[in-house]
Length: 294
Image (cartoon, rainbow, N blue to C red; front, side, top):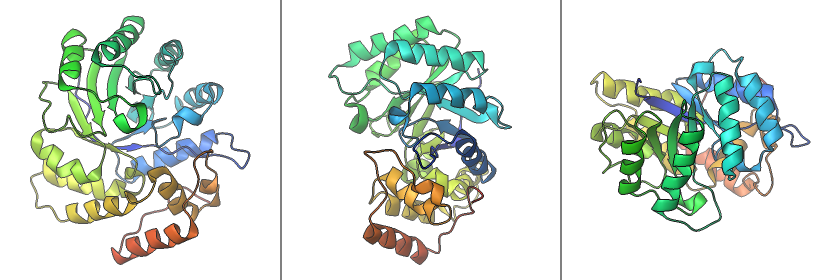
């Protein structure tokens, strides 16, 4: 098994005016940010509004994604709370030759390490051919992975539990496991994480920082002087002042109005915040290539 590493965007989902998922443009957006520098895209994570999208649309999407020219560069998020639905979605993914999944523990209920170990054990037992990246984001699901829980899962399932996206940031500095991928969830942690032995990043704002993030990553791998890391951190810090999904959709909507479509209860930034965001980015002399034709 080869270790997964690199710059991964948490992919955005694109919607029509009636709020149905625009499958073709969601895939095109993902393909374009890979062209701009990402090693891959995590589909249907929190940035992709996965919990708000119907299972029927997710099934349709996965079937179409299997035809993408970059089909080997996707990590498939499930965005589901039901154990049965997660298993069924993973089996569908495997039938389409997707084998790597980003899976967060279920939201809403209170539980601890033992219950989380049991949850992932059920997934592995049901879909042993899969590879799972744990999604550590206490802010969203209410649970924070402990070092002990991750180590226990990897010890029992070394072929299936292959990495973690650490958006809570309690793991990436302290977790030391062989042949295990660790991805902090922010560009502000990219260089530090690489220096600590992390594998890269999986982040929302790589939708706009793909080129910058890839430059920082490549310069580290090639042992070159870092010339773009501070600008990368500054861009992420600006977006961190807002809800990331709202900020990203607002940013892209200035070039393509389809990005204005966002699933309730989420919404775009206020006009005041939009102006503030764009002024701050302009002051950094930050621009991106268009992600998608209008």
